[in-house]
Image (cartoon, rainbow, N blue to C red):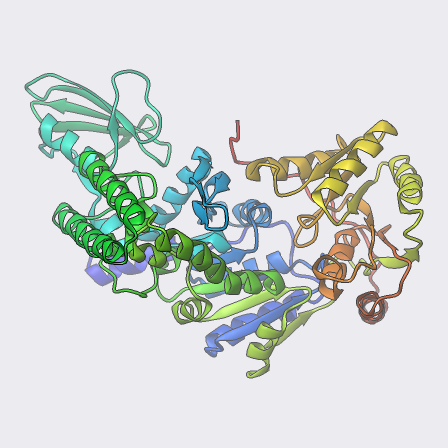
Length: 610
């Protein structure tokens, strides 16, 4: 077999294969065809303008299968990313579908407030399950051409050099020879920690004698357990989760990895920068800042020498990556195989988030640097600027029921706006009614009770976290099975809350901003938007259309806007809903379609969040 034949077989075996009991319906066939043709014609920017419930995810999955390209999907938040991950996993059970979001359950960034001279130390709680999935994502990108990555906007933060991460791996093969000392040394460089008892991901146990005979157990950060059998330093058996393997690659336990010779040089450069900055503070008569910076930096250098890692190591990333001042960090985008397809989900909110992230980060860092808490190079530990993000991407499909001006303008240049107005189910956009805001809570309770008696579910949208919690407490007091969902609920708990709603364990979920885009809840027949006339981000046209769309998967869907004023956003929402309903009615009549609800199974989460 020639080398070219071998490569061809590997590629064929790694093709995306979509598995679904459904076939494209409604507007999906023409949308899939146009998107695929657009990519093949090398259109850089396309928009899929699809109404809620029209099956945009299935359309994108169908396009991915046909194009067979590595694909990155960026979602605006973790809850939508988790839902997309579950959906794409079901569509592509044999392919490499990955989840890459921020691994913090709680995060308080380091900051300094000059007004009252308050230093706030970084405080974070890392979710080990998400950390495992992040490492699995990167390692799959190195080995699988059929990789589909579902990420949140945090993917534009630096995670270190892909070359360093890949080159640092330890390659073990049956028949290979390695001493206890060398193995421990290599695992230490990879940030694995030796243990003598039970081990967790990132630890290993060395049960070999001085002759190098015995067993070694390694708990990989991707959660697999490895058993190595050794006989006089020779590897005689490799098992991963009990299955025999001929070889094994062990990648670093942490992302910030640098070869030893570069690591030592980076430490020298950090110290040189510190000395220069301390001199500047001293010459300016700022002795307190000089002492603070010197003490902190020398402590970090010492910890890096001893352990290879220190909390806040990312603030030295410019040195470890050997980047020039101002040069962008290396992010998930740099790990993606080239060329790759980018899908920007719910683009009307994802793009503004990507635009704003660097500015907010820079303002916080400026104070830390100015007052001697961080070196000036820490400013380059940052998310990508939007123009840097644009330089790192190529062909992009923006997906939204309400695309923003940026993506519409980009797509208009090539006439690449693809509309998907008709649902495969034939369900129409829900009717919208307007009721007084003064009596909204009492009226809402009556409507909820009516839905509960029919075994239907409800969503209620408030303006603040506090009002969501207060409304939930009121509903519970009235005997309604209710809960709230907002940003303080743990990331991987959120899909379970929504699954409980679908199962009927909860009748009402009260939310603020997390119950707008992308949620697939066919049991929901009522969406109630409180204080709908409070014009602003949460009650603008795009927000109202998105919230109303949560009722678009039920034939009984209804939306109530509680408002005392008819704002421009409300008028625009009513007009657009009317336009869409007329188009859908025409299609159904022409095609002889009777609207019917989709009996979509409730997905059980793959995440272990306990």
